Image (cartoon, rainbow, N blue to C red; front, side):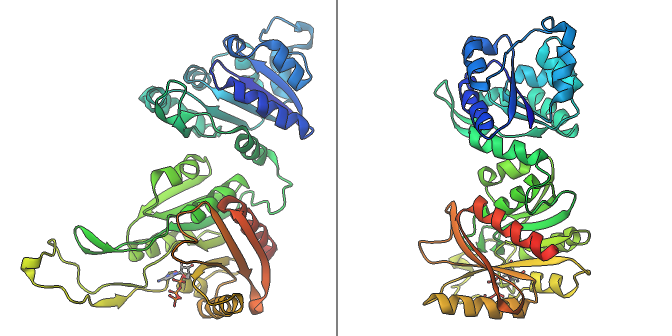
Length: 404
Ligand code: CTP
């Protein structure tokens, strides 16, 4: 593939050397377009050696080849990494005072930017407005990630790691990837519901929402339009998915709210994924005031059952709609885990049940997961383990098969 990697003037430019190398070793034809400022951080010889192509910043070289527009026209993908606040502002305004600017205006290829700057600059309303403008034009904004910054401070502003940028940017064009979800609408729930007892207390669970968010992000990377319904997912867990141009996030609190949001999202969805941990019961009464010892000892809490959201969605699904449920189980052995999962799939009436084993020290609040996917007649269609993102990719592969 013909890829233009535009590099702008930030210290993270050194990471882009690795990014270019990853693309070149994967067999892509990469043209690096640095700004003049970028060359203060990493020089031309490095870009030429690593990309194996001549590098220029000027619109006045190679004029016979009409280089200032030819690069953009020939590009199948443009990645701007790092994208400084200044370049983001120039892109939003459509300025074309250098080769990067003309290339960006001349291209019809997907454009991905990997912002990198200090947290204050990233959060500035001007930068945020420019980012919104670019997103509105379909630019994929990859990051920034949170972490330690060059000045010793920390917060959102770090350029995303090159491996991840490459993965996400290639997904923008990789329409032949297995399990391609291009143009499909999917509804995903993530997190854990909380059922209030009084204004300060609730019945909840340990779900962090990581697996659900990874599923939403993986679907969006495969081209799906994602409605992500989140119950109490931390901002840091949600950040990537929330920034994805194909993802719309809705926040909910209780099981009833999650049910209502999922019913709406499911209306035009080809796939429904219930990864959220939903409270099976809620307190029969919610106290308007904080319960105190003065209001009398509380020895028990009367509970009433919540509706089974996924079972209801499965019961009313439209022809062709695929419904996926999750089950986090504790089991004595593998056979018991699978037997329980099979019974649960039957009971819920879903197409696919993804089961993982949990315990005090496994399954929750970690970045790893290990699952089995149970399909029709209780068949184990696949198993997957690794990062929650890797597991999410496998799940979408199986869902794509089920979708036919
Ligand atoms: N779920 C749901 N509505 C509920 C409870 C659970 O939609 N009220 C969904 C979850 O999102 C998940 C699946 O059902 O996809 C399995 O959740 P789980 O809590 O394991 O199911 P339960 O029916 O509560 O089974 P158990 O008897 O093991 O608690």
